[in-house]
Structure formats: structure tokens, C-alpha cells
Amino acid sequence: MMRRNYKLIGSAIAASAVMIGFSGTAQAVPSFARQTGMACAACHTTFPELTQFGRDFKLNGYTMTGLKQIESQGGPNLPKLKINEIPALSAMIQTSYTYTKGNTPGTTQDVQFPEQLSLFYAGEITPHIGAFVQVTHDYKSGGFGMDNSEVRYANHTKNTTYGIVINNGPTISDIYQATPVWGFPFAHGPSYNAPIIEQMGQNVGGIGAYAMFNNHFYVQGNVYKTMSGGDSGNSAIPAWNGNDPADGKVKGAAPYWRLAYQTNFGPNFLEVGTYGVLVDLIPGADFGTTNKYRDVALDAQWERPFGDDSIVVRSSYTHQNVDLDASAPGTSAKLKLFKLNGSYHFGSSKALSLGYVHTSGDPVAGTNTGTTGYLVQGNYFPWENVRLSLQYTGYTKFQGTSNNASDNNTTYLLGWFMF
Image: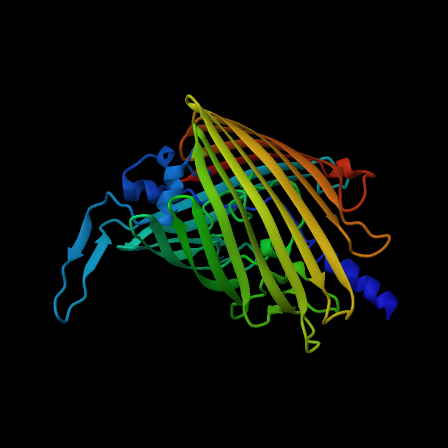
């Protein structure tokens, strides 16, 4: 039994140890520019990084519009109508070249055209209701599947902006970029051991409410359930009993919370906050009880302009506790994830970024799944909706060992086109 438990514990840290990179896809889409009549730079320093105006636009449900609208005042038996004359549609294509230092033949170079192809509806649906809906091409099925998406109802009083949000993953609705879904470097990046909060996207559906008080205090709460046929991010759950990891499901509902404080002092913007999720997971084989995942995170974001230039620094720390009450009663595991990154923007046409990630764990004596990686990235924007990136990722430790960790060092070229 003890030998079996050790195997399960190692897998439990792999519950957090599915190899993914810094996450994030497009939150900046030309749909918003078409709807508002404003250039991308109104909402973004460089896409997809949000300015204060961009954060306010999202808080208010993506409903600001400068388009001609079709309107009907309605009547006793006729509802009102107010929709944009031109739908808020757009598309994204990414193409990339990846070179990995390792010596394995056939795996050191990879050209992808496209790396990602997405379609978007992003903008106002009706007054007070807007959406960011992304569907992305699935190369396995040959069709399109739902990507990061949300629908918002937003309203405000004199000192409070509040709303209701429906989305398909924790942190999708967040307005800051120290949290996972919209986090740096927005494409590719170091691979690391991932807590379950970073694994749930597109596999759960949830509803919640949020509010910003006095433009300082942000609070949000959501509950998430496994979608029909979804796996609740259980790619984080290994095949402990020969079952597909996707068999795991959330029992009941998983609560997610977000608290943050933001302020401006002089030319500086500062945000500090916390977020987390509590997940009771039924593994691939139903043992009659659940494995418990408890993720708690702290984050911070600092911004400062220097004339036309600006600097942004973001950091987060996530602590995950895992209790294997279903798979191996009486055993547990931990994962700790630290991220730090910063970008200097040369106007709106160029940016230089540095990133660092470190994971450590407490799976079982003699086992270590830690990774330490760093990133250097340069971005060039010949047009506001075109991003050309050169990224180098290096490792001093990879999946618990420093031996040959540098074999995983990667050079990545990206062309990112929004239209």
C-alpha cells in the first residue's frame, strides 16, 4: 500500500505538474476598436496589456460604443432593441518557429502555421451587457472549440461599478495581468508545474458577481461546475488507475474568490490582491470521495509612465495544498509557484521584457518536481494590430533536476496578427 501511495503522491504533484507555459491568449481584439472608434492604444500600452482606460472598459461590460446603432423604443407588447449596426467581429492568427537546444532528433525545431487561429465576438450585446467570446481551431478534431470567453452585465452607481459575469474559467474576468489567464508573456514561455487554478479554463462553467468600490477596492466571487463532457481542468490529474485524466470532475461547485486594492500615487499605478479556488475533484476512478485542491495566491502589479515610455512589473505567488482523500487516504502534497516579470515599453512600437518562474513542492521524501526558468523577450509592433516577438527561455532547473536542464532552453519567434 505504501509503495502505491508513493506513486500516487508523485502523480499528485504532477496534479500540479502538467507541463504548461505562462498562459494567456488574446484579450485585445480589433472588435473593440471598431466598436469604439478608438485606436488600440486607448486600451493597451501594447496589446494585450491593459491601460487604466482598458480596465475600466472591461469593468463596464465592453459596452462603450461609437457605432451607429439600430434602435427601437418598444411599446406595451414590444421589447426595446439597441444593437450595433456592424457586429463586433474579429479574428486572430499566430504563426511561429521554435528551436529547442536538446539533441533529440526531430524535436528540436517546430514551425507552426498557424500556431493558433481564433475568431471573436467582442463588444456590446445590449446596453449594460457585453461579451468577449473566443473560439479557436482544434487541430485534433478539425473544428472550432470554445476558448476563453465571458458575458458580462455591468452597471454603476456614483462610486461603485458592479456586475454579473458568466465565463468558462477562473481569472478570465480579471482586469489585472498578474493573474493566470491574461498573464505574461501572453504566448509560449517557460514550462512549469501548474496549480489547478491554471488548469480549469474551458473545462468548467461558472457564474459570479463583482464590484469596484471608489475605484480602489475590487471584489469578485464565482462558483464553477464541470461542463457536460468537460474535465474541469483535470489534465492536471494524472492517469492514476489507467484512466484518461479527463475523467476527473468537480464535485458540486468550486468557489473562486478575488480581492484587490488599486491606487494611484503621483504617476504610479499599484495593485495588490489575492485570489484562489477550492476544488473537490472526483478522479478518473470514483472512489466514493474526492481529492481536495486548495489554491491561494497573492499578486501585485506596478505601472509607471516615463513620457511616451512606460514600465510594468507584475508578480504572483500561488500555494496549492492537495489532499488525496480519494486516491490515497491520509496522504497529501504541496506546490508553490512564484512568478516575476517586467516590461519596458518604448512608446507603443517596441517593448523589452524579462520573466522568471520558480516552482517547488513537497510531494514525498526523495522527490522533487521543482523548475526554475527565465525569459528574455523583445516585441516590435510595426502596426498596432501586428506583434512580432523574439523570445528566449532558459532553465537552471527542470522538473526536479539541474542536470541537462539547459537542454530545454528554447528560442521562439512569433508573428501575431489581429484583424
